[in-house]
Length: 261
Ligand SMILES: C[S@@+](CC[C@H](N)C(=O)[O-])C[C@H]1O[C@@H](n2cnc3c(N)ncnc32)[C@H](O)[C@@H]1O
Image (cartoon, rainbow, N blue to C red):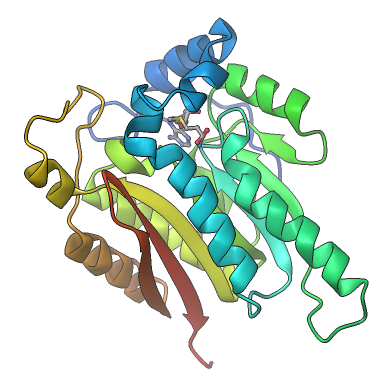
């Protein structure tokens, strides 16, 4: 049975100005990313291991490792799926794969009948949303940004939330807290949040690697762990965390456990 997770479509008010400590500058999110989407190059960048978006194969690792994890976790509850900063929709692949597999499993009258639907993608760049809608008509795409989650969605209605390539390099610690605590509020007991982040240690071990103007923020695994626990504390849930991959962009997987009320 599918969950009604969407509260309302965002009001057409301007996005909050994300400059100076906000996630992305409004100009960047709406303009630059839309331009990338419209350039026709986005798909090529993703596939190219030398491009900054797929550096060190990190993009592909995310898709593979998160999908592998989701397929192996049979305790994920039924509920909605969401990809934050979904771009053209490619990073929805792990959620879509899990959703497809649970549909076929649940029809086989087993005890395992979790249903991952409906599925949403949010992104502030109109151009990306347009591409995503054309690629994946079964997904609901909304032009919105990461700090609007609780405005858009009902709490405790999601099974899986992912975010690839947005939190990784552009988010300061206090925004991690703001966004992650919203993510944890949306997740059901046993729900999971998978995301990537730039790994301080990798850059220390590879001092000649291109740092890149875009890659402003890096985190150690211990810092990510501390941030996740702090966000969990803010919304009174427990979390368990594992790293699915340690590379240039490391991949973290957090499972939310609701405290008994
Ligand atoms: C590197 S792309 C990654 C796209 C997609 N996740 C993927 O892996 O293919 C970064 C995306 O983050 C989006 N973005 C920028 N600011 C955002 C914000 N405040 N909230 C959510 N997404 C944002 C951009 O529009 C862009 O589509």
